[in-house]
Length: 130
Picture 1: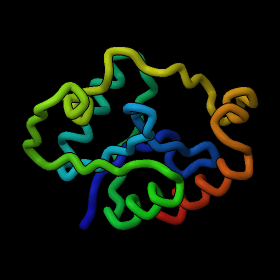
Picture 2 (picture 1 turned 45 degrees about the vertical axis):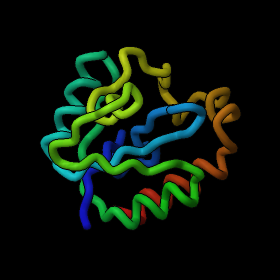
Picture 3 (picture 1 turned 90 degrees about the horizontal axis):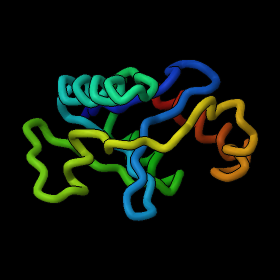
């Protein structure tokens, strides 16, 4: 099954995937409907957040990537209606975003998140998904 995910600088060495931090967990959204993913991108752009591109990948590949990276994958069905504030974040980004700047060049951010070797491994796995 194909899903739509949000990638930053897709196909480059500094490629990244859009994620949310929910209750201490890193969550990757997988949209069933491309229009929902495009709308989410538009909402991010309206908040002056860098605009990701919508990429179509297999659900099993994204879930495997998340499992390996210690992330949580959440599937957003077409017509999804949230019932909690947390679920609302699956269709509309939070009002404030974490500052990311140039995540691929800022060594202090890299040290806080993970080592450069781990980031390189994640980047390679994302490239293999494409």
